[in-house]
Amino acid sequence: MAAGRGARLARRYGRATVLRPNPLRLEPLVPYDANTAECLVFTYKDGLLSRVGHDLKLRCDRFSVTLEEDRVEATFDAGAWTCVAALKDGRENPGALSDKDKRQILENMRKGVLQPNKYKDIRFRSTAVERDGNALKVKGDLTLHGATRQITASARKVSGKWVAEVELDQTDFGIKPFTALMGTLKVKKNVKVRVSVPAGDQE
Image (cartoon, rainbow, N blue to C red; front, side, top):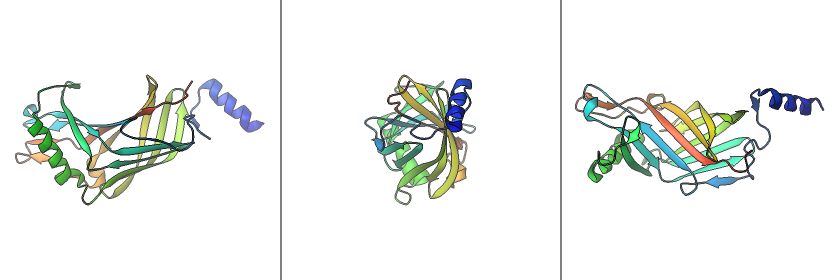
């Protein structure tokens, strides 16, 4: 009785609560992949010659996200990426990159950044999920480039989807951000990751 009353009060007054069980109201073990969900990474230029560089929008083409009760697990193939477009003022800038440019960017990612031949998968396992209205806070362990760090992603419900975002510091995972032209053109160490999955039968 007391636990039920506490839950009702938490809902009534909008207090953030740990979700148990099945916070996302999805059937157990619902897997999502690149056909039903989306994983995007945004990188940002830096350095003295940043004006001639590009912010980038990248997409992971092979991954799996599983939602079960209050647990979120995800695996991303570190070698399966598409360079979607260059960005200008936060918007896609079609034509700024040739197909050759895009292939070179992906090659640089493979060889000098993610190194999928050595670190094939990027993995996330949640340790806590909290909800406050139509917002979620997901805490968990991210294993990237052979290093595991705790991260917190914020998610919101947008047009029938849960959209989660987190900013990662590449150097936390032992990754040296890409540089060129003796460091005068480089990628900032912080990148933004955005994962979108169907919200299911949400109110």
